Image 1 (cartoon, rainbow, N blue to C red):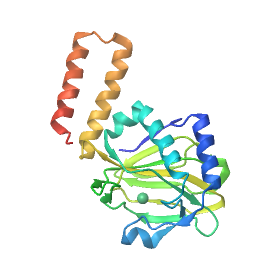
Image 2: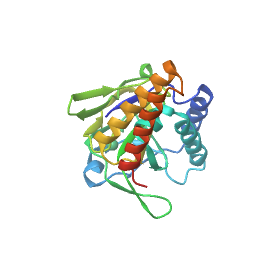
Image 3: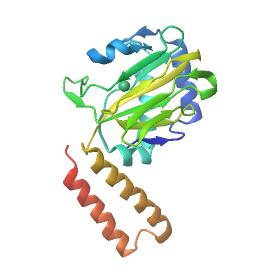
Image 4: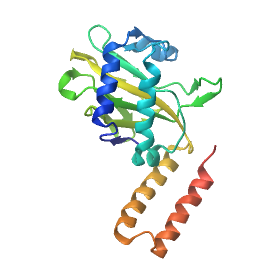
Length: 226
Ligand code: NI
């Protein structure tokens, strides 16, 4: 399930992040598995950069505010977000899937169920640079406004097409979901979305809505692991 969410960042957060990116010392990163590494041609902010922590905090605060993200991803753990830049010679990330296990700062591991890209450049600032994601419905080309987010299953084959003009700045992250199975997660998201719509029209106290909300919670109880 691929979900796009507009305006995850507020204007001031986007400005602060872009200022941080402007000052960062970019480097060729190696945060990829053996296959992905061979097709990865972009720049990242290295772990030691003193601005990284503040930038990560800004992104995490924005993610935690998004009801749609919490409902669609049901995040259990989120790997500290990273930032990348595509331009000039380092302008693409060829077809790959994201590796399944990522080490966390505390030494444990995160299973990548969901990958996310938060766009930090507007589409008119660069040519190319589409994030293409394959699923059973076909190939999706994603290029969102700065401040908007896409989440998709980490197991999907995806790439960032070459940037042929300008630069594409983005933040990317990996999440372990409370619900590992993509289809179960999709059912829960669709049910929660419908429930929120119904609550808006019928109020919180409608008895059938209380029953359906209970059913949602019982399915989440049955399918989640933490
Ligand atoms: Ni990837």
